[in-house]
Each structure stands twice: as structure tokens, then as C-alpha cells.
Image (cartoon, rainbow, N blue to C red; front, side):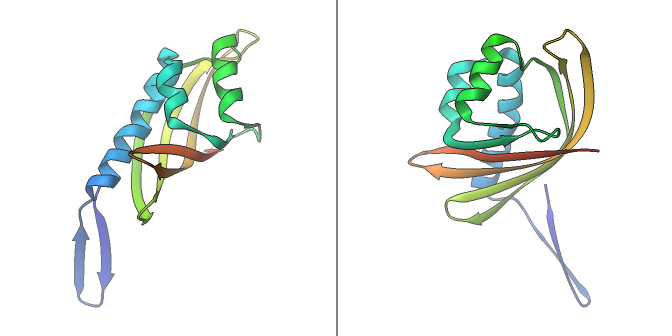
Length: 139
């Protein structure tokens, strides 16, 4: 992920910081944990203040996300991140904007596959990064 700044007659590229790389990796792992239903890993990275806003307008807390994974109401079978960019907003906050393909099975047994644009907000608490906000829009 390369950031470009355009100034008259000059192009300056800025490589991602170590913290941006860390959060980008965490955000990608989260999708694998959703698929594999790794509740402990997810619980540690989901902030209790989380607002997880799905593309259909459905809003969940961190507890509801975990409960729905356990019950099968949320059942992701695949996630492909097509692109993602982590940007540090301040020393304790990083925003990730990404696009991806999400597949799963609805609680009525119907399979789904959708392309989404999503924004995630991570806040550093102690030595770890927590997801505090996620919103997605169907493409």
C-alpha cells in the first residue's frame, strides 16, 4: 500500500508505517477468524463499544457478532480482500478502507456472495488494536 501526494511538478510516495501494516494484517486475520469461527481471537480484537454495520443496515455489538457466529445466524464461508488501505489518523486510531468479496450462508440456508466497500476503525488500547466501528456498502 503506497500513498501518493501530488504537488505541482512533484510526486511523493509514502510507505505505510509499522502500525498501519500491523492493523492491515489484523483486519485481514479478522476475516479468517470469522470464517473459522475463532471466537476467542475475535472477542479479543472486538471492542465492547463496537458498532458493526452490515450492508443491509443491520447494526450489531461485539457480543451480538460473536453470539450470531456461534448460533449460525452469521456464517461466512469466504472473504477475498481485493484492496485495502490502512491510514493512521492519530497515534491511537487507524482507519482501514477496503473492497472485497464476501460469501456465506444465510440462516435460512441460502448461499450469498456480495461485493462490499467497507470502512473499519481501530483504536489502540494498551498494547493491542481493537475494532470499534465497521460499516459496509454493497457495490
